[in-house]
Length: 66
Image: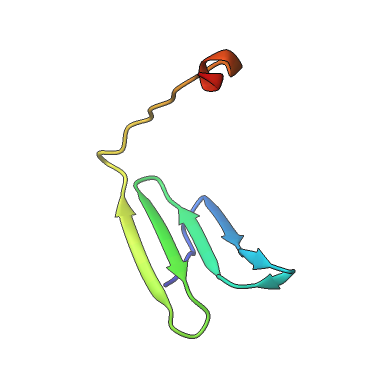
């Protein structure tokens, strides 16, 4: 997968005892989210963002306590 025209690109590596276990690269364009996972076996995913909504929730410390 090529990430040439995307605005944002970042990588994430889950580490156990300092050793990277998973390799994931994310890229975000205006209308799609691209995911590339794996080290030896690569998996590419493309998610269309035309129906994604921004939902946020705020809970106070007291609400989380109960």
